[in-house]
Amino acid sequence: MTCRLYLISPGTIDPESFAEPFKQALDGGDVACFQLRLKSFDGTPAGDDAIKRACDILLPIAHAHDVAFLLNDRPDLVKALGADGCHIGQEDMSCSDARRLLGEDLTIGVTCHNSRHLAMTAGEDGADYVAFGAFFDTGTKAPKSRADLDILSWWQEVTLMPCVAIGGITVANCPSLIAAGADFIAVSNGVWNHHGGPRQAVSDFNACFNA
Figure 1 (cartoon, rainbow, N blue to C red):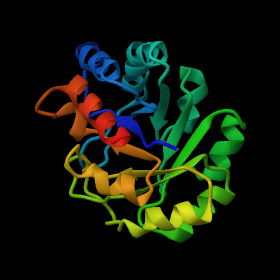
Figure 2 (cartoon, rainbow, N blue to C red):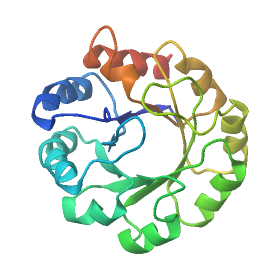
Figure 3 (cartoon, helix red, strand yellow):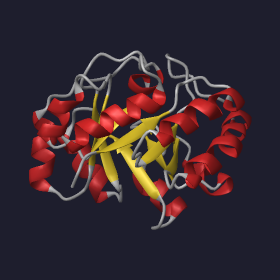
Figure 4 (cartoon, rainbow, N blue to C red):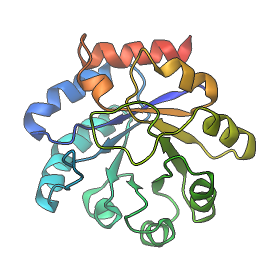
């Protein structure tokens, strides 16, 4: 399986003005999914109205590009807003409860930091993928853990469930994660703050995946 790009929104956006760079990113090459993560650096979440407004504008763009649209932390809003699933952390609704709420067809991903135990538990509780990190310094949030490359290699050996690498990933530092076994590379600043713009960033990441 070729590694693919998992795109994450900036923590704070104006959906109307963000729509154009979002389109540019999706026009840059293959993107597996997009996670709407509206949170400040300290983790304060946006309100329901802001999430709904962003979904109204951005979700149709994602679906027009055949990109799955996931909500961060809010499985309770997924069906109402027409999203394709959610990504939850260890302090959010449990994976098993989210699965009961969303049913079997919608996607659930779980943050597992640098913990093999949390990852195995997420799999047992019905997750579709697990996310490990942070692998590098990140400006998106204050990471709760630092993960080593060997957790990606270990995960590939013990299960077929996909894993996502997250945390400070750029075009320059992603090759080691790809080689270690990441199925998806989750990127926020590495795309939106790329010196060549979001379209070039996505193109560059895909060149790394296909190298």
